[in-house]
Structures are given as structure tokens and as C-alpha cells.
Length: 347
Image 1 (cartoon, rainbow, N blue to C red):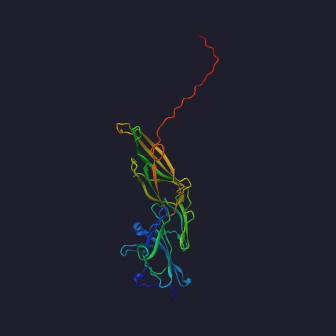
Image 2: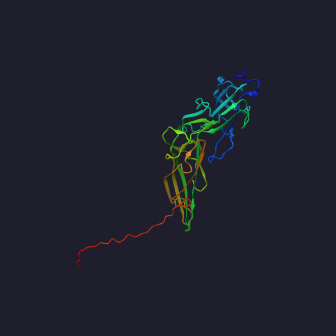
Image 3: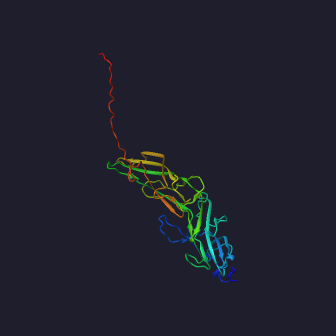
């Protein structure tokens, strides 16, 4: 009997439950404590694969095959949906979890997790998560927030967000006349972005080994992604404004021409001493500006990374980041053109 996967069913404590946590590493690689999965994903069931490890390896078997697990509000527990599992009397169980649950899950074996052809644009609201493998378990325990199998999730994608502000909105030079600007962002988009790709994680010394580059392998051409900026107010001061909430992007290196592009309307007022007039001095429409999304300090959107861009917009041609380029003049006089002639003039 020692080699059989017998179950104790008379003790509710032997029901297999799950304790969930969600871990996201900060962009600076500063370690953060896991947050309760329920804080952000309460209505998001996750999937479980489990394997029974018997005292006799010949008795090893699949224990759970893409089992859906949901939050049980009555008991404040995460439990399998539609069925009940009990801890075997002997041997142990290994678990791999992913989120969100799907009837077409990633390809999961005891040593690997593979996502294939994932299109971030078509699945923009889906936060792909994979959990550390939990091995050698024989009972419920509490490591995080619940009593059950420990499930520590990590993000498989990257995400990014954008803020913007004016470098300056008003200038008063020594001459005393003032100039102010108002800028409207009419269009905001990301250009040359990879959106579809594959990822395989392999188990190495009990931990999931990511690709050396920490990005997915793209299998699609580059596309442009429009970002809804309709809620962005007119930029009339130097306060920072949010362009958009964080959104998911395919992890990728940023050395393939990825950039952001804006189309602006810029209004300029001048006050020569009697106050600003009602109408602007000039209005510039369809002003196009762009900038690279990568730099020597940011070479990629990495797996499990959240990147925030703070854009500083210069409303006139730049002298520096803090001041506009003042209009000055460069006077010169061309040399006389000397004409020699042998013509005779009769008076």
C-alpha cells in the first residue's frame, strides 16, 4: 500500500488549496515583496498542472491537467473549480501554475513552459503570468497570503506607460516682453514595434531560465501602435500629465528603429507690455516630432519589466532643454562687384 496514491478524504485540511502571490521586479532590479494575487486578479482564475511523485517511480502520474483554480469567497481560499482534490497518503506532488486559465494553455511540461505566436495587440488586456515550480509537496502550508500550495507568479510580458510635460510654458527675457505656449497632442503612436512572438522557459536548478537576452523571439513584422491620447489636456504649464495607463508590450530589444512619434498643434502668444491678446500670435499645426524609444541606458523592454517614459516637450526650436532658441541676426555685406570696361563715353 505504501506505493499507492491513496487519499485521505475524511479531513477537510487534506483538501488541496492554493496560496497565490504576484511578484513584479522593479525596473531598477530592486527586490519587492510579493503582492497578493487577489489584489489585482481576484476575478482571474489560473491554470494548474501537477504531477504525482510516488515512492516507486513506476507509479508516477499526471495529477492535474490544466485544472482551473478560482477564488472561493466563502472560505477565502483558492480552490479547484468544479472538483475537489486531496493530498495523497504517500509520495508528493509537483505543481506548475500559469495565469490566466485558458482552454488552450501554454505548452507546459515538468521542465518547460512555452508560449507560441502570442499577439500582444490582439490580447492587450491579458497579463501573462507563470509561477515558480512548487515541488515535493505533501500538505497545505502558508507562505504568502493563504493556506495551500505556494504559487508565486511572474510576468511573462513587459509593460510601458508615458507621461509628458512642457520644458517651459512661458519665457520673460531681459527685454521684458513675454512669450507663452500652449501645446495640444493631436496624435501619439509607437512606430516599428514587434507585437507577436514566442517564449520558452526551461527549468534550471529549480528556477525558470529566461532567454539570455531577456526578450521574446519575434515572429512578426514591425507595426505602428496608435495610443489614445484623447484624455490628455492641453499642455499649458510645466506640470506632468499622464498620456496613458501602463499597457502590455512584447519584450524586445530597442535597436531596430522603434520610436515614438507625436503630431502637435502649438500656439504662441506674445505680450509686449499690454497683456496677452485673446488670439495667439502664431499657430503651428501638424507639427511632427519623434524620438527613439531606446538609448544607451534603455536597450530593451525586458521580460517582467515595467518601463515608464517621462517625455519633456520643447515648444519652440531648442537652444537647450531649459530655454528656447532666441531669434538673432547674422548681418554681413557682400563685396563690391568690380566691373572693368574699355568702353568710350562721349560727352
